Length: 193
Image (cartoon, rainbow, N blue to C red; front, top):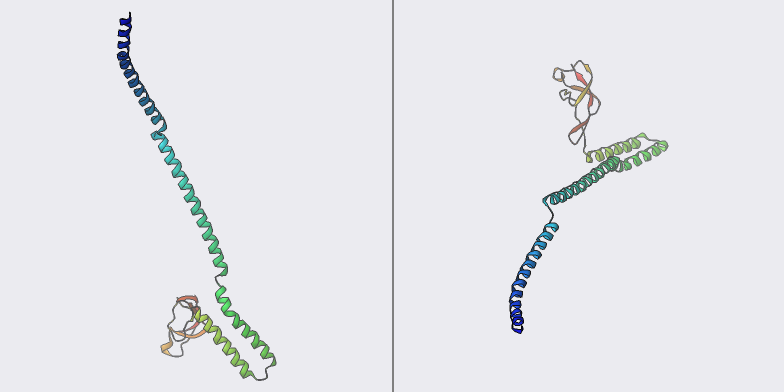
């Protein structure tokens, strides 16, 4: 019996090793299977990836749309502010001329001689013309020029004093002006017929 026990004991470890090896290999297979299942469960499916990409694209679109809307509002506000103050520079430049006119009026009340007053008004007019010329205003020379409907507004026709003035500007009722080479006021003229 002892021998059997010994045999059984000797057989048992070998049997145990085989059994253990099978159990270990089964355990490894199960662990690998479980790991693969966990990885499959943890790894997002193609549908999940597409949903995530769609959500990111929508978020990016909304942010871009909001940024554009803010840009549009800001530019509208800036344009409105620019329109409100666009003539400021010219007005500030004309203020000294206004002051000169006020001084001329005060001096006319006390003036006995007309010549100095006339000279003062001429100086003020020249100052005004210089300021406007600096801002791009230029007088249109019309008298003696051929009539051009793009530049002149004919008020009337009169018989030409000489033959060379036929179809040309004989007299100017109001001067025309250019602002940086664009007509801002047409000259009102009398044309020789």
